[in-house]
Length: 125
Image 1: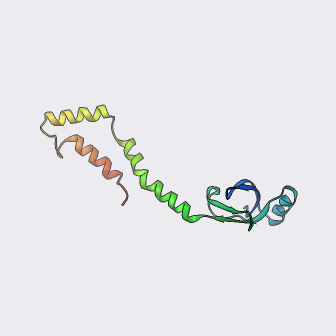
Image 2 (image 1 turned 180 degrees about the vertical axis):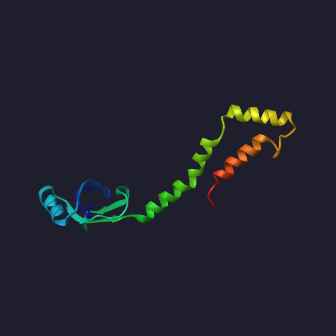
Image 3 (image 1 turned 90 degrees about the vertical axis):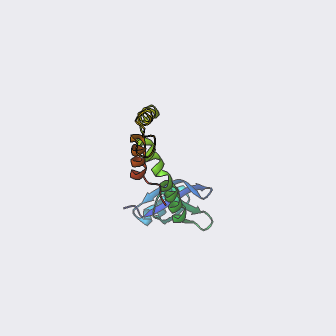
């Protein structure tokens, strides 16, 4: 398991070039040859690692990660619903038949189908 990071270059608090190592000694040797600094590998995704070049630290920004995950979850239901809805032409045909049968209200097939999709893919609270 790779436990150490040799940060070779960075910009705007993000890593631009790095190498990970199992042993700190190997990471130190890499930095001696290529420059940069060594630190323990943080948790989480590289996209949420924050570099402080002056302090030579690398941290994991869990609050931004959690915020991004929550934002994605808040709209995930929209994609599920979109994939589940029938084509507009089919919905219009269903509405036409509901109207012809005098069911252009919550008793029609169109309403039941759309209500099921919405209940199967609820909007988060």
